[in-house]
Length: 70
Image 1 (spheres, helix red, strand yellow):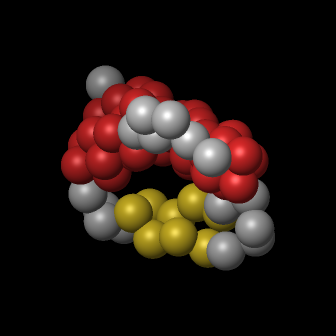
Image 2: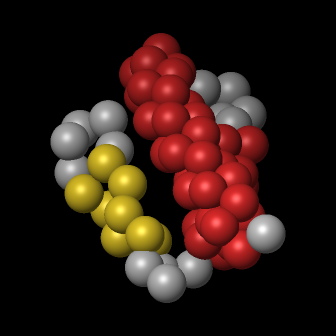
Image 3: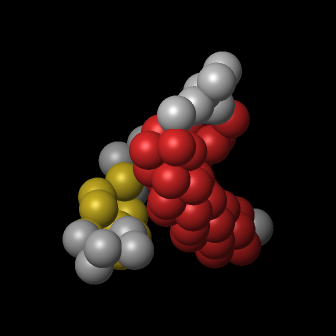
């Protein structure tokens, strides 16, 4: 089943494998720079906010999907 979510930039994203998408996003969230420069730190903060939002939306989809199959 295809799912769609909208990211913080307003882009529509198609989710074809929900379980794999959640796994990949969890990996992105956990990625940190060892010793980030100031520029990397600012970028990392923005990206972490972005990926946490995606992670939340994917988990909401999983919850809905679980309720529909129960």
